[in-house]
Length: 432
Image (cartoon, rainbow, N blue to C red; front, side, top):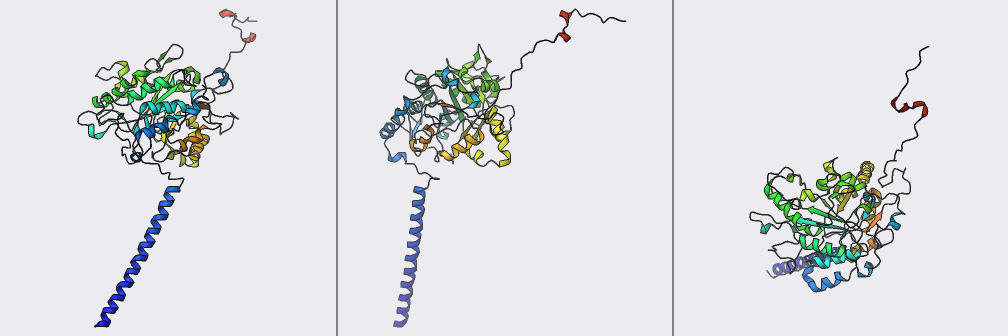
């Protein structure tokens, strides 16, 4: 009997050793994965806002680009433009701020429109992206547009704080627009003469057709929030015609960039055509369709009438070689913006360089509050001095040229005397 107990005891000890070895290996594997995750350049880990005080984050962001602000210059300066051959708006790369109003950090960060916009202006930014959505817990019968930051699964990433309330009666869009109007055109801004582009990126719209009252009212609230720009909005221009309701999108893009000095251009991915012919009357400046100058659509929509494209960076990074030429031809005449599909992964220099230098994409917004991830943008050849950078075009005849080349002007030649109509008094030929 004693021998039996000894055998059972030995078996249990052996089992315990196996389990210990298994647990050790498991812990080792998890430790290796953790180290890889923390050090991998492909999967950057950003700090959680819950571990950072709002005042500390404000101080970091407030001083992030102050040393760069004094070096900024306007691209629309005549002495600068004189050295650029193709001056059309579509022929310029643009420095853009993603998540305007948000100061980060990306995980559970903070919303502060004043600090955020000042940071972007100090960096030289002239394109501001507003990610717009509604907060579901607020939606009983109406949908109120809010500036949001959502991860790839739709989770809200903003902490509620003094500048971002769940029950905000006015919303954040107007606060951001007021800050842009104040700082982007101030005398202290080195490139204040350059145009500003506002990109309204709607993540969702209320349920209903594009003509339904709930959708139109939602868009109308956004239009009202753009009021701070009223005196700068591009509309019925004395020397260029009307740009309301996207009526001259192609002309808008091929005009010289200095045409829009001191102006605010509104680009949007929303289909606002429901305002046209609506039975509900909207004042002009409450009508978002009236204010939008350029409609942005997805490349996959194949909307040939559109002159704006909004895509993910993944779309261009995974584009087949057979589609490369077609993509380049599109960006020559269509203003194109690429957004990172996952806010937790800032766009890297490698991705930025490939998409801009290969395809001529004009705008890839940065998370400027992530200073380390964005520092490559402020080097020679990019946005060290200017908020807009002209696309290089050493050989206009090359298939790889990324610029829109205006067609040559046809000038009337001298009338041939042999074809002279004698002011209409043609003589009958003599008959022999």
